[in-house]
Image (cartoon, rainbow, N blue to C red; front, top):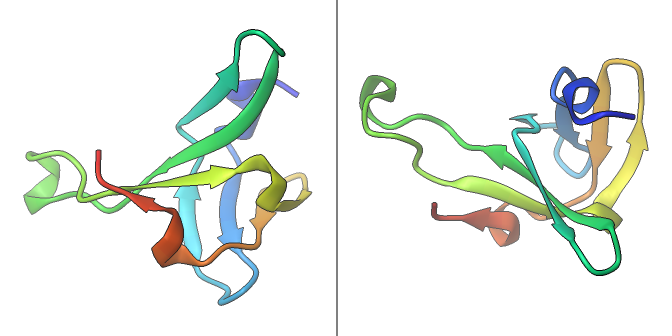
Length: 84
C-alpha cells in the first residue's frame, strides 16, 4: 500500500467511535526501514489561517484494521495529541 492510498482513508478511533481525520504523514526508522508512527492533523485554528491546534501521532501498533475506506485505530485521544 502506498502513502497516497492511506491518505484517502479516514481514521476512526474504535474506543469512542470518533473520526480523527486523514493520515497526513508517516514517521519511519531509516535503519530498519519500518514505519512506526502515523500523523493525523487536528482541527484548524481561527479559520485555518493560524495553523493547527494539535496533531495526533499514533503508533502503528495501535492500528487494528485497514479497510477499503477507513483505518481503525485503538487509542486514548488525549495521550496521542501532540502540539506541532
